[in-house]
Length: 158
Image (cartoon, rainbow, N blue to C red; front, side):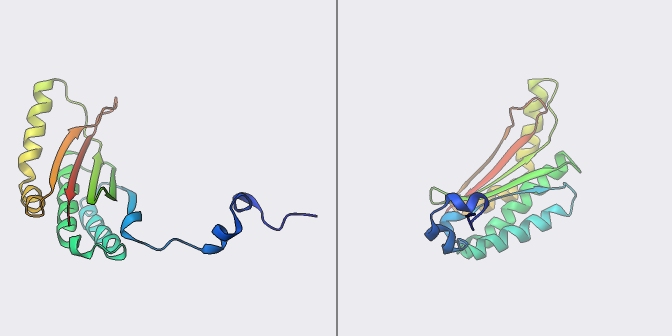
C-alpha cells in the first residue's frame, strides 16, 4: 500500500502539517532580499520594509525604519552604483536590525579605505540623526571577502 503523504511532509507529525502557515508576528520578522542596485531601489526597499513592519506588528517603527532603509540603500548606491545589494530586516533581541551589504570594491591601501569610510559616514548624517532619536545605533564596516563589499546597518528600539 502506498503512503498518501509524499515528500518532506511525511516526516512531519500530522499536527504540524495540519496547522497551516505561521502568521506574521514580531518574533518571526526575518527577511532578506536582493536588490538589483539601481537608484530606484531606495524607494522599493523603503516600501517593502514599511509593509513588513506593519504586517509583523511593528508599525510604530515604520517611519524611522523606512528612512533608515532608504539612507542605507542610497549611500550604497552613491558609493557603488548599479551593483546588487542584499537587504536584511530582522527583529532580534528586542530591536529591529536593518543590514545592507553592497559590493564596494577593496581599496588599494588602508589609508584609502579609511578615507572612503569617513566620506560614507559623513554622508549618512540623516540616518545618524533618525537612529539617534530612536535610541538606536548605526555603523558600517568592510565585508571580509576577497571581492570586498561594505556592511552598513541601523539598529532601532521601540
